[in-house]
Length: 267
Image (cartoon, rainbow, N blue to C red; front, side, top):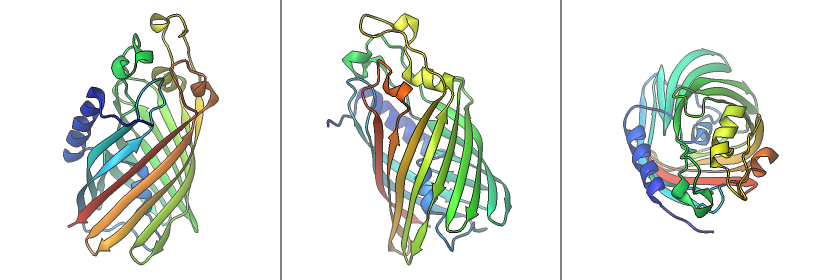
């Protein structure tokens, strides 16, 4: 298993740092899941956390290297607005255990034809900004989460629907949140990131279109308080790709794995 910070990944790092340090949206939804531990509610007084960490992710594409990327960490929680990594949004509604948020986030699923010899001749796929709505319902002992996002920059012009069941735990300064989920990707989304256009087809790589796809997810978010104002944040996740994605001539794996670790100081 090889790790690489390529020219394309270097561009991702700069985009990520710029996006986080400015005022925009979400890192991993798993980190916010850990913050949903029992006994915690939204604070009216703003809270801010700053730190640094690293992200590992496997690359599903033929011949492409896995990535290890250093990242800054930023989380802000206010009465009305919030920022979590590469995303953020606004609280629209809350009534007891039910809440609805307006979301925006940056998607880093882009690749370039130069990322591997097998991708040469494939047009570059770009990242994009997505926006939508997320709803949460606390049904002790679990949290049900649903979000719908759509591409606002018309790169993939598609949508993603994500459903999760989360079981948060809290013990002193330890926050643990395992989850199970499913991600539904529209045909435009699936074809843009995993398909092959007729102009990209060559011998051994035929044109390939996808319909709606369904990816299954499992993961774990963990936060450990090292000091009253210092938190160790980590997350790991596994995604089982839809068979249509696995069958793509540019895809080389049936699963995707990501992990992150970082440390942050709360003000």
